[in-house]
Image (tube, rainbow, N blue to C red):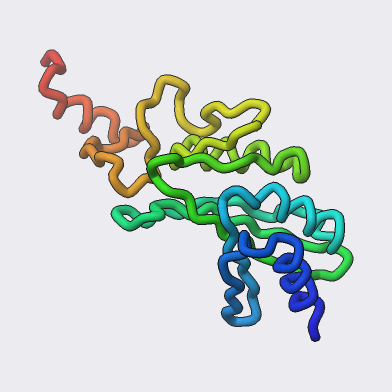
Length: 171
């Protein structure tokens, strides 16, 4: 039995039915978890199996399907040189999941980015506010139902061209 198989079996015995599935694709293992168990799973993997680095935290929008979102965690064990993925389905009716920043302090910025771009709340987060978009921005730009408006991006080289096309610009 490989080390990653021991880790997944330990996670199954620790969390029971909270482990929805274990998927292996091209030698990469991803454990699909119930939303309520993410904090416990991360704490277990960190303390019992030396997964001491949160390498990535991201989200995916599957709109119009439900569960609409998936929050994805990539954990790495420096000791064992091993990655494990955690995927947590999140419904659009309650887009919220527990923070893991008490276990992995670098989750702070990752969770703020997911909140800013997708609107997924991280309960218990110490400072959940926008990190990429302006504070007064409305909506979450990486949601698939976010309205796209056509406005050409203005750079220094095309400033005059765009400025002339504005209907309210005075000639």
